[in-house]
Length: 216
Image 1: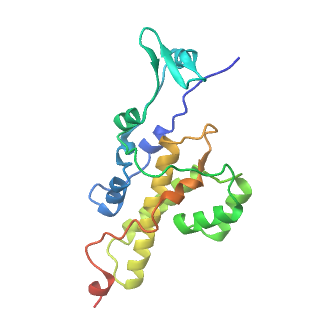
Image 2: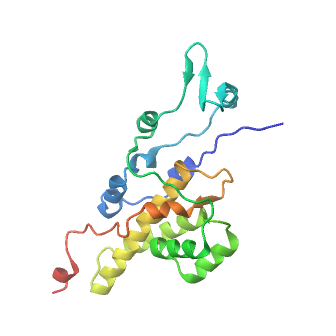
Image 3: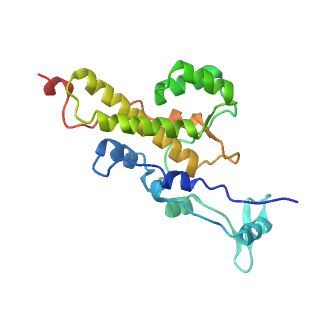
């Protein structure tokens, strides 16, 4: 007997603590990414009868649904844009199914700011190019707390640390957002690290002052 269910991680995002609305260092990069509306997207339940009906109407040969009396129907990119309010432009994300240990380590250190010890632990526990849902969530919450604590830096060193923390916070949130709502893994355990390759190196440089003028 086969069981069909919808993979939904929307609750993970809806229940996640978020930055204050007036903290532009967090919300501006999120809007610029085109994924801002995903923060408020999700569903609680999907009727099992509806899922079974869609499965019965799906034709794998044409990759479309056959709905009498409407006929053949399929999901288009325009549907994606209208339902999720996300852009449908840009380069296609194409990647191999497996990622080397070196590439995984480089992405985690460069974008998430994790230590080598954490990288080694992740590579030993996770297969391929995956990371558990738990890790980016915990790092995001830690970065968010640090950004609040360093919100009024008094030295260039604190300013530099704040920039690092803000960038890590945004990247961890975006990875978690994409992994939960766009490309949810059916195992309900993992997010693919390859999504980090689409992120900029610095998301946080949008403050109203520079280190050179603030501390002179």
